[in-house]
Length: 529
Image (cartoon, rainbow, N blue to C red):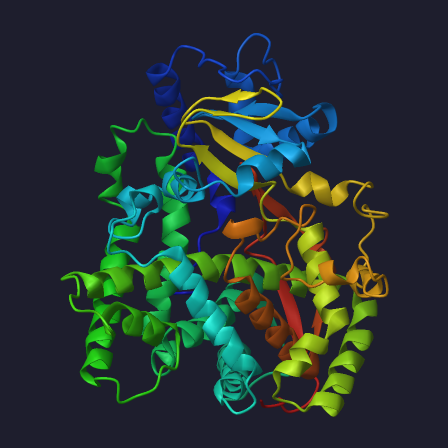
């Protein structure tokens, strides 16, 4: 089921620790020599003067600390050891600009994704980064599809945005009904407790699949469950595969969940593609799937034999890319609101004012919620998912203008989380200020950098430049619409026993505790639309 999500805390059970120890032993035997340092920048970590393995093992759970330490100590770059490789971090902004927009033949983001998530084993098929086939859906086409859908939300003559809002309301009503149902009767309770992450994932899953596939697929519980299993099984499988030697991974991957779920997903999506092709253009394009089908089949003299499979695979990967990241951001926002009740009334007042000024179902409402946008962006600053950004693999040798040489195959990053705690870029960075970015809008020099979806050299959660996340605007809309519905209909609190809220660390990542809960108390009958 979609709610049966992977909980990283299971890593700490005695059985799992024993298995991890066995895996680690195998790895150490397999690579018994201390791997070489090929880049002339400082190595950060415990005991790295003598061996890198102690720091590499520690970085399984404390890599974020190593990145923060390197950011403070290094002049322009540093590197940290992991169980698989050395990872190079570029701190100098001039150097970052030199590599961030290079084409994929020189510095590849796609190759990093393939490597990090073991796509060749766990998601075999089309559209995988530097192995991208000639008939795959290009990334610019994905970006154009998302931009097309965003333009539709601003068109007052297009019903898409109203339907999008209605689906948000419907999704919440369905999940609230399920979670608040009294097991002893058919009535619902006015106050109920929900596992925050799984609740957010359910809602985000419904909204995202509406944008990708439309109805009725976004309301099909079996399909939603498969989407959830795939988005969960892929990163979980990659974490479990990564410590093993590469020659062993194909044998282990055969027994993992992600490839099996992917096959089922592609079967369902493929059948829907066939149904839409059969309409022969009689129905207008309504969602991202329609856009891809139109791109793959219309105006072509020759259509590749595997076009259906290509489109289905790209849609499955969009499910993976969008489900967990947006759900994590919504989860963090719910926790911050629950712990900081002083923000609730100002946010509610802003919603009310924007509704009165722009109407309830218009794009202008979302674009005018400056305080809410700021609160979400501050939450993102306060709880960055990844300590690194701008990940690339050097596809060939590369030399920076200052003479630093990067060999082919090197993994390059720039620090992300430490930037948000740097007083040079953020005033009082150790203080959570939910309206920090709303207040910055009064400054003509800063107002263009304030939006949640705006990227910049000191705001890298969504990437930067030509490789910035094309789905960030959709994620922003989904989180805002979700918070509008929740703030209008519920008080959100957290039990003191849950505090302080734990975060689960793995490598450079920090996630909200997936088992933590919030309480929702109904204010009145749910507001629809």
